[in-house]
Length: 268
Length: 252
Image (cartoon, rainbow over all chains, first blue to last red; front, side, top):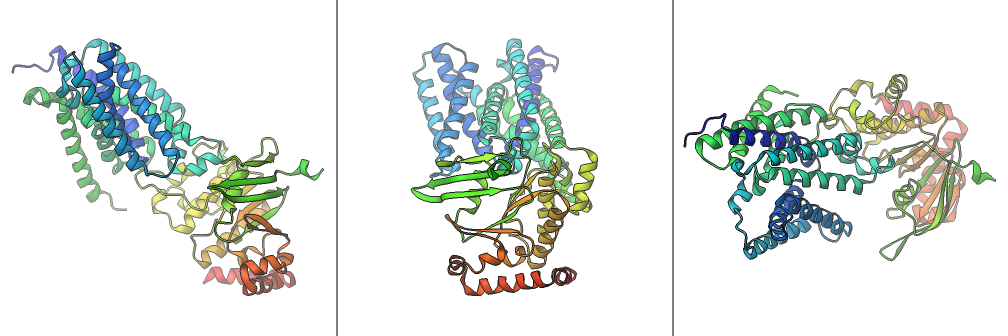
């Protein structure tokens, strides 16, 4: 395969990948702080159902994904209100039911769907229109979070302290659910649904050892994400492997490097 | 008439959870400069009462009347420090607070948190953490300070130091305090009024009266009542002496 790094599809892939990194660094920090990785995973799993329904109903994959992901996130928050079962169990139920339904819908589907691309990402599927849509999504999610930044921080530290200052934790959870949904919809083409959680967690976890404030953690996580996306996409083109796994491997290398050097350099 | 002046008051409050009455016909009011301590056995609904007053939960019946724009400072028993989030003490105390630099300086010096202000939350000792929580609750210059078992996680000398600090804040600032505490013998010196709760209000009054109340004695036992009587005695006869005792403990 003769691909130059200036080929339009690579440029499109990188632009889309940077969009993913810009938002997954920010949201990923909250996923790490609030231990939402399984929640993110569960929302990502429901995107398969969303994609299938989107095609089946002719409303497009993105709308289908956003709709179903939001729905499953809200369903979880509602189920969580009765405290009889742990979040862990509820998410286990939701994630796999959504996945099963997704596979069923897709196998009913007359239209051919590239399951491999949905699971692992494929930069060849990205068009300029997609990229525009992605950056609109990034902007939306960043605005949602920045406007509620201090409330989100406080509710993350302690829900009772937040309540005492008039914050409704459920409202904050809904906000996080909507941005998570946006991230999932954005990342599907580049990262693929099976690895979206990795893209959320690994850059944030890598940043953790290098910083001492939440704001800095977001910035560093985003930079690590951008770096991983760019190198990962080059690697994926060069080695002819799916983009998602390639990006994740690059960020994982950074994670172990930061862990290694963090342990040796930082003596507290 | 009195109700109008109250900072916060509850009227005939009832809370039922899982078909069990957690709070039964509670009437309570906190006025300016009050120092009210709520005591009671586990499961007596103490924390529930605090949380209802702060409107975390809606009571099943009854009313809560708050002075308009009442500034409340809330200090929880503890917070779950999440090591995954890097956060300095300064950042934690000030996040989502409106304040000016002078009052910030004042708060961290009066709570003695100035030495740890640039440390990460995750490295604080228990006593430091409690003072940091107190500092945060004071930053908006509250009219009412609500504390939920503030010294629960401290050792004895830590508890004594904490209540001394609270006492000095109470006497220096023009605020009211509502506190849940198990540390009766330590609180008795400072508190003006004690409310004994066991889902319903068993008794309420000055510390001296409370210890003679049959309901109190039946709940906490004669020994506790005697211990507290001793503390009050030294408190009444010679406050200075009592403070010396507290100072002595601190230096150990």
